[in-house]
Length: 75
Image (cartoon, rainbow, N blue to C red; front, side, top):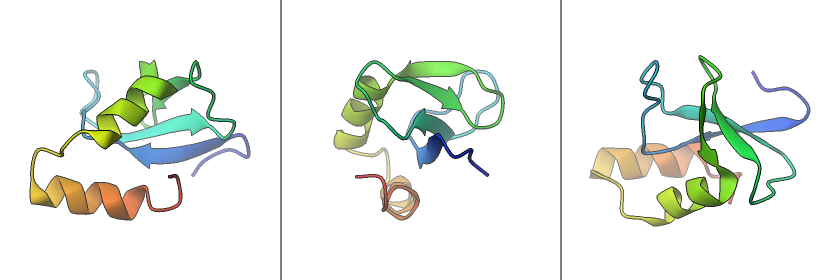
């Protein structure tokens, strides 16, 4: 569950700490906002870097489908 000030998104990169693909970002979505793992809270990257990851080709068709479903409301 997310707080009122953040949204969840799924990225192709797994968290190096726990392996989760689910991350949280501020609803403001400023390019310099940190993207944190939804499970362990580790900082993965900045929001503009996460957007670049989402624009690149996914590793597989399954990854593409998962990202499409999870991120449907965030683009």
